[in-house]
Image (cartoon, rainbow, N blue to C red; front, side, top):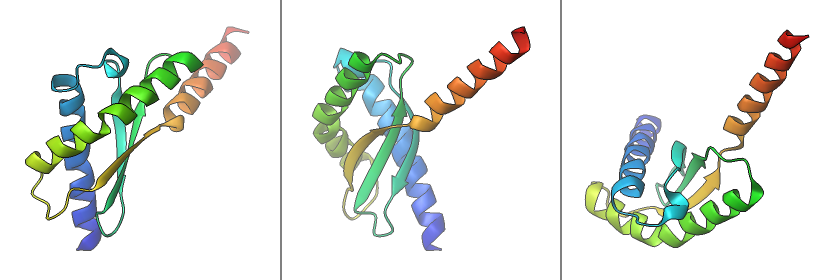
Length: 115
C-alpha cells in the first residue's frame, strides 16, 4: 500500500512541477527544463526532482541548476496548494544523468553504423 502511495505522489509531483515550471516560473534559465523523474522518501518528507535539458554545455547546466534552486521555494508553495498532502515535501532538483548517458550511447551506436 505504501509503495503505491509513494508512486502516486511521485507521479503527481512530476506532473505538477512540469506545469508549475512552464506556467508560474518566469525564470528563462528553467524554460527548457523537462522533469524526467521524482523520487520521494518513504515518509513523503523529501522529493528529489530529476530533470534534463537539451544543452550539454556546462555553463547552461549550471545556470539551469541555479534557476531551479532559486525557484524551489515557489515550486514547493505551489505544490502545497495543488497536492492533497498533510505536509508538502522539501524539494531538491538534480540533473538526470541517465538521459545524457542514453544520448551518448545512441551517438556511439550511430557512429558505429557509419563505418
